[in-house]
Image (cartoon, rainbow, N blue to C red):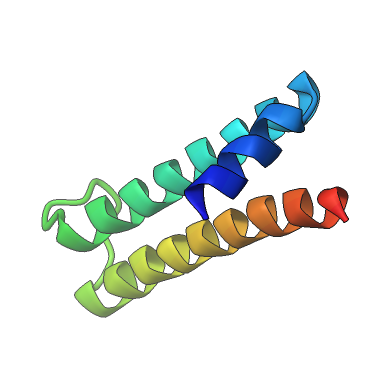
Length: 79
């Protein structure tokens, strides 16, 4: 599986590799912000704990959605 991904990655143009990198980067950013919002008790924006957790989970779910889309779009281009 990793070997297949590596071969497909090397076949991609520079533009496609850049977009994949940006997709992974923003996945990590949204995931990190979601965890920070959930765990940081003294979050600068005053939110009730329930809303703070909901916002954190929403950001994490959106991050996973972006991750899925980044790989799904790249896999569609291969076929």
